Image 1: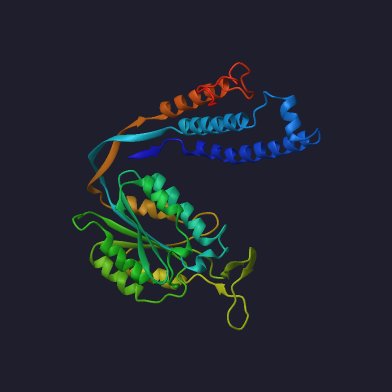
Image 2: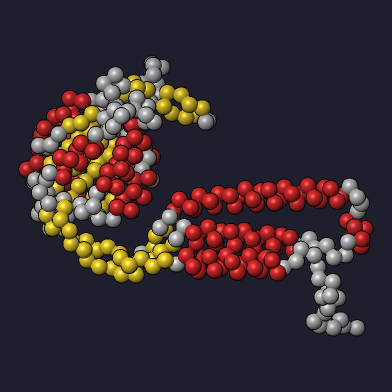
Length: 344
């Protein structure tokens, strides 16, 4: 299992394209400056030891050295041992609405992005529980099967966008039904599902699905993203921001369907929380979830991660030494040396 211990250092790689652009700009300026002094053939006679390719080769080597060192300081690691780990916790499934209405900005920066940030913070607070992730709009899909791998959960979370689900709508019932099937079939402990949505354009029997989930021992919590007053749905055309309009040309305003989400939570024997700009409400629900009875969970995890940074640092230092050894000018002692004699 491969991982980067300090991925934030990889942002330093962004300097590589900037250095490449600056190098080629300097090369172009240098060629223009030399052209002012005379023709290339004449200058080559006056400066016989000047090499055109060596500076480029040295720069390429230096860029590879810098890349290798940056990767090294980010600490690449490999998990060397896979073991079964037993812990006490619950299974938690999060269903996130990714319909276009979740792009409304009545909660900053928008409903979907605010929900994703809150989920990421929740993942950081989990320790012994298993987590799964479902995305839904007009239909529901499993984004992450139930797992104890929190690193993967955050990676999958970052990739979520409205484009993931081609059918628009808000099929909360389908998300609950998929969630029921997604829990571990052999797990008999506490199970909970958190649905994060604005509830608008509700299409199916979500209350009935929540009732069925409660019968199977799954507690349903709902979080309402948005405000009762609502907000427009932004869209971008040729890079210009505008707002979605109906057939009559009126700006569409998406509003939080709070009564529906309250009914779903009540049918699922859980609780409803309305999000706002100050907090989403996941922390409050996490407190409720933590009160649920913990059962023994078994999962496979990688341990004993070995650092491999020394190989990248070593390669980088070797390339720097190589760059230092290679001269920008031709070696006057070797330029006339010919390994094979000329044929007569």
